[in-house]
Image (cartoon, rainbow, N blue to C red; front, side, top):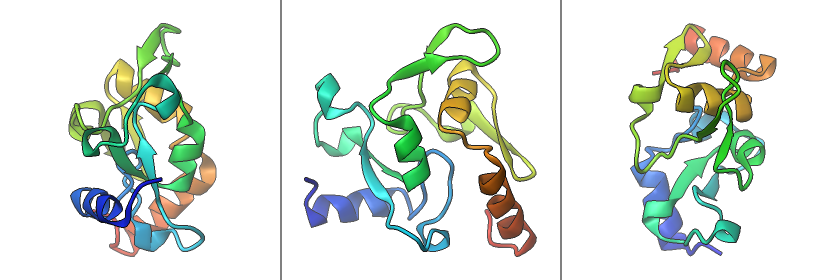
Length: 134
């Protein structure tokens, strides 16, 4: 269990955005964002700030305890994006409402977390049109 102070620090550090798909908590009205263990407890990850990320429910559910997956372009097993050790901009870019992986890590993360599932793209498109995506 993550204490309230640690949760607050993680939310502040992420500026209220999912550290994977960049959705803002205020746009997800159905549920609160999760404090996600980047390296899951079952893989000997710890509940330290360096191993915690703010994640929307969808990204957290699709990521699960995974540390790797197969790159959808090459089939090679690749590490997933690590929000504490890597910069989002080095691995991802936006193409309108779609998130594109620019590296093997980015492509693998986009694929596994299903960042471009139709409803997720539709939501980003609406937010972009409303001027509420930055």
